[in-house]
Image (cartoon, rainbow, N blue to C red; front, side, top):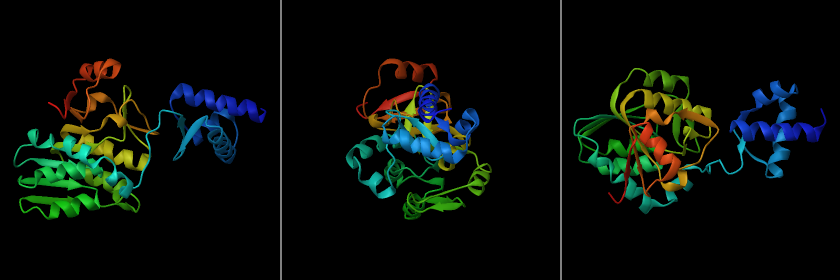
Length: 253
């Protein structure tokens, strides 16, 4: 197969499937993984796709990937408005899992006077919770992501399986009709287990995270109970949220 023909097939597969791994493409096209990696670099330079960890997704479907400091500095006032809705849903003496989202960090600040038992994989959120007299905090074990300041890996997932909590609260990297997404499998597996261990799941997302997708699918829409966002959602996405019994809460309600 000639180079341009292979590049065309790769683009077609990724556009059709919404994402593809290097392993899958190498097997499908019967070439080496190194060949696929070079092809993806070439296609990205032509703005035909966006490379992510372990594969690629179509242009326009990716959510922007930022480090912890960059995420913390974006739309802090908007995050506060979204996070302020949390205290209306959480009851005193609840058990909660918090992910490593910076929006969740802001939400935690709304619960400083609550008696809560908490679990998190975020160093930042664990330190914040440790300052609250009425809160207990369990920091999950695992490998440290130095850029994002969260813990992940098989040990993290295994420890999570030992808990069942009243609420799981997580920030959304990307959400579409197809579910919730993240850009890496390592973080996605932890978030997936967090969702499974929560009796109710509260997702926090501003409008820029909606109708977007990432490389790794965390769960279907039916797995979340509440979506707190800043703008009214309309059209097909709102219909799908309703069909999956997701309660949408906006900051103006």
